[in-house]
Image (cartoon, rainbow over all chains, first blue to last red; front, side):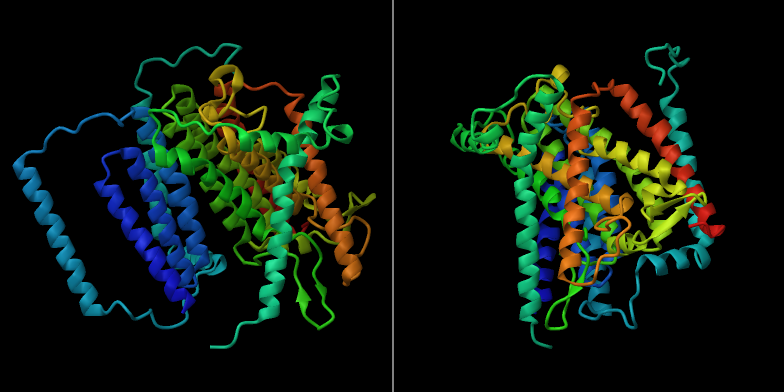
Length: 174
Length: 356
């Protein structure tokens, strides 16, 4: 009973703030709403008895990634910029693809049922996740790490293209 | 559906009341310690008019905060400006829930009393998750004030806190590896008892005394200062450069809330350092009896350790000058992050060799 109330409260929070992300004109408010939405999703994980995933959701998405988003938005100072009007073809494509996605979502939710929980014991503590990751899923795990490494090297290359690095003086050397 | 265990609910309520009361009283006491401590270090009297040794100065300050006018800058984002101080306070108040603060003992009814509000098996992750939310209070305040200095404070805070969170978490990983658990209760139990270092000195089995943890302790300890925005790392407010940083535009009780969250975050960090490295509630060279006496003594030991760490926070603030901002980022990314990773390898080696 209590878990039902908690579920519907945080489901409402997640949906309302997700809508805010799309609808609000101010990008900073949008980013903060996304944080609230992620936080409400973490509560869903707790209700599914997966507190480990909930903690990771908050640490990685709400805590780390969204701070970087906010950081970039604040540095770009987007708050007073009026957006240029979009072309009709862009609007048409946007509305139709969102509508198609929404319809597909409703169809599959109706087909597979929304009220059923996954069968069998659902174990997701740190130990189980770690063992699975380093035994069954070691190959995709390593692939992702190589992908991330490539992205980091690429980012460094792109940001470091301003000629020679400034000479290191005694003052800014650690 | 089985019935609700009302005794359990009552005990939980009692524990929450005690811990919350202690946390709320940390701020006035610490403000007094800070002002008297800084006076001691700078060789001046400090506040000494209100009450004995100026002890009631904090209460006079609190009264002043309540009576001051609550300002709202004309161009501020009203909603975010108002909720930002609360957002800073919530993580500072809630993280303490997973820290054990005494030895469990059997109550007269045969019920085990565990002096921890929420004994969850992901304890340390919960702390890092909530601590990472703490930065939003500062960022929101900085942005919503519509003031350039505040914005700089908020941006600096977000950059600094993501950088140091990494080394903080990785330093904690060393401890968790040796304990083999994410629960802080297990981490403390792992540190009870004693061991003999280099066949010579008998030391309590605290992590700080284990050679594998020395680097981790230094990294964690210094990163804790950066994470709580204290000098020498207080770039979010840096009064010489940014007026007062993210809380330049705040007044009255809203400003006081930022103050409270700073001191509570300090208390939580001290409790965390105590739990991870200084044996938590363990009393050195003494085996606490599993009864009310042992419980009381262990709580006293925990409070004593946290108090010493809190005093060190004050001591460092008034002794070490502020770093330059680029040095802070270099220190975080080029020194502490590699050191924390190296320490993980060292701990893994110790575990593989069965020295830990």
